[in-house]
Length: 130
Image (cartoon, rainbow, N blue to C red; front, side, top):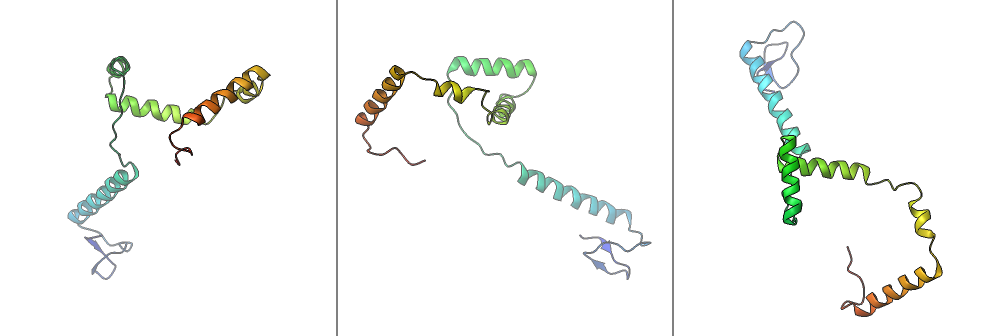
């Protein structure tokens, strides 16, 4: 860091030796450098990726009403909602898969027919690779 003086009095990039006093201007320079590093870290750690989403007008109006009521921007409200959803999204409700497994023969046959119809109508022979 600029402005730091070692025990011999020479400017360097090390930590000042005990008992060596820095000038007030050197302390200000060091504080400015620490602040700049902190800001750089914060910027890199919280990179914002611009994106575009398409919402139906009634949904967008509801988002705007809720954001206004909470006195936050639309963007901030959407980010918080997504963070909340993703934080809870990894857990399935108890018994979810058990209920899915409880199907009768008629439902199983209907799902098999539906999948066969979908496969027959595909313009691509295999599903897209994601």
